[in-house]
Length: 76
Image 1 (cartoon, rainbow, N blue to C red):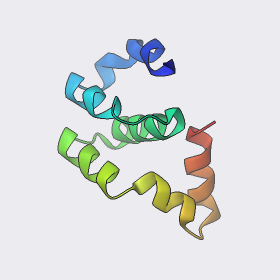
Image 2: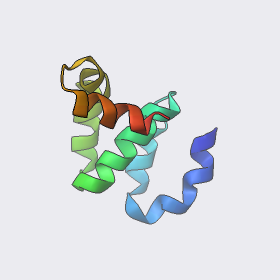
Image 3: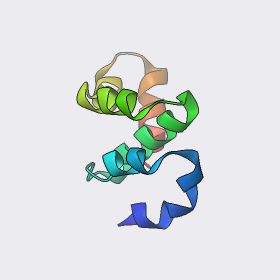
Image 4: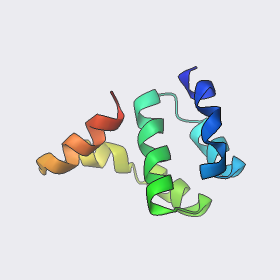
């Protein structure tokens, strides 16, 4: 339930964004999508798309060390 303590970030994303993030049980994974959505100014539709195509997992499986470090930094 670490996600509930991050409620102070609400102005960064809409309530609809956070509703989508609530479905992700892994805290590191939800942190990754939250930070990427804020940084890239994703609309809810884009956030849903990135979750559905498993961006987080694909970065972990990629051969690029920079991508793997980026994904793992969010999950720690």
